[in-house]
Picture 1: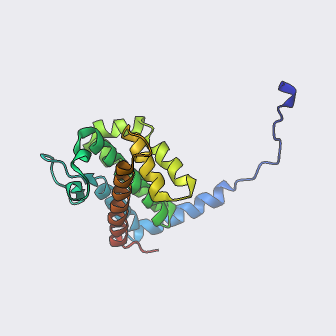
Picture 2 (picture 1 turned 120 degrees about the vertical axis):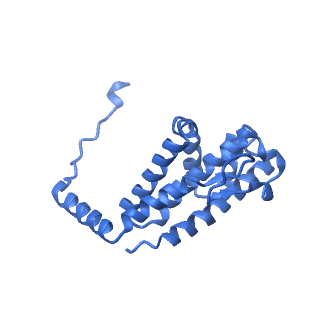
Picture 3 (picture 1 turned 90 degrees about the vertical axis):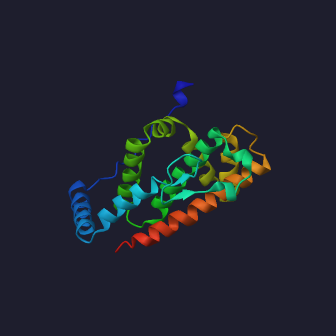
Length: 193
């Protein structure tokens, strides 16, 4: 059996470290000078406040009142946790997809994660140790019906059948609501590219 294993010994691509580093540094300096780097940091910090509005919690600028959008059964602590995980995933995904400069999207994502880690450490530890993002990434990679795939992942993470229509619909509503808010916030940032 071991004789059947072959190791690829193809030609390694040459990486021009000095040229790429120089280009990256120039871009970073440009983003710093035109204010884009600061805008990316502020956007990430703001998106860390994208949360479901829960009775008794402090309302943030980006709190979403899902009571108006979802049935009461979606108000339990476990499900609200899963809603917030999906909101963070949506923010991270859209920052990567909608900000055309990788350095700026990475800066925004890092600022969001830093803010979550500092201000909501228990929540952050749970999402950073959990597998939820993996299921959402797999849903995105399916490439069929993104909303339904995200909804099915949401249903599964809520510990119900991934065929539970009400949970799939809830996941779709959460995803679409988050995407609208996040896209609007990215637009408001007015990155100069």
